[in-house]
Image 1 (cartoon, rainbow, N blue to C red):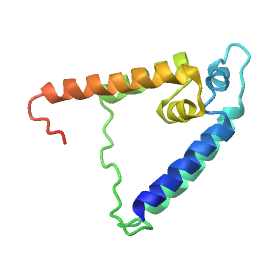
Image 2 (cartoon, rainbow, N blue to C red; image 1 turned 180 degrees about the horizontal axis):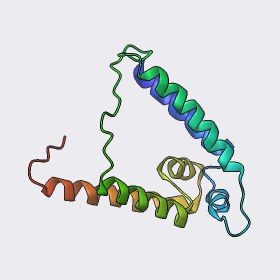
Image 3 (cartoon, rainbow, N blue to C red; image 1 turned 45 degrees about the vertical axis):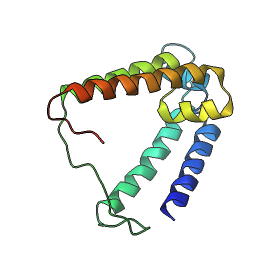
Length: 143
């Protein structure tokens, strides 16, 4: 049941990304172009996502189990580290250069956007490099 629910949630998420234009790099870059022909429509998408996410977090913090009966797993760290700041900056720069972030890039790949192929390939390569670097650190346990 959990796998089916995850599949349906993923399909709904992907559909929402397509409908909202988040999987279209030109629309995203238009939103990020504050000095040019700015397209504010994605601000409404983000505001809606923040509202839904905030509501979900509000209820999630008050329960120990999900609606499917699985243990609720929420992040506990509230520490802002240099690693977090640099990772966030890299994410933002990548989003601004390519017009994609990971979720919409996968949706765009499935929808046949040619630009998504290069982005997803670079994203996977970055994940592999990160994992290899992490494995070289002493005391780091990876599954």
